[in-house]
Image (cartoon, rainbow, N blue to C red; front, side, top):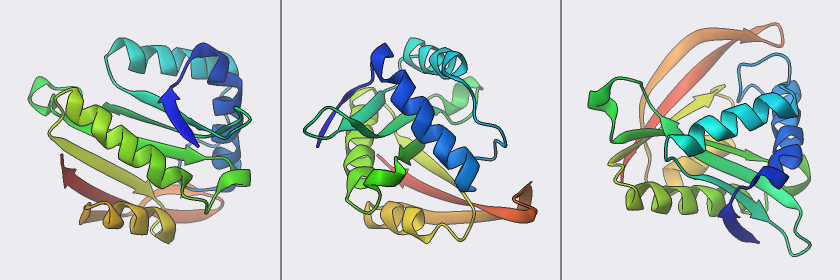
Length: 164
């Protein structure tokens, strides 16, 4: 696997990966997967703001997953705090792709002056994501209980934080 900056040509694969997550997981609280045009818009906004947006590709160049950082909150005092997002294709899960992406994302954020990274993990039952973040030094800082409803059930959100 190699990790590199995402480019426009990656958007179809990113759209598919995110769509899989929207339809099958509670990691995202979206109900309907956005189309490629919307994903281009989101990617453009993140890149224009100076945040890293990365993809992990296998030896054949297939996008296995992606990760990006964005503003944790819009107010200036939060400027050195970022929120991470990591999504991996169903075909590449449990192969270390998420760890590779998150490690690279943390490094890129440090290089851009970020001091804190927050993980907002949808669904307390997402133990793999919580374990990954914990293994990389994140600590549990809170749980928002029953804050969203998806798949006909109320879902918690776990907050984790790491000083970069």
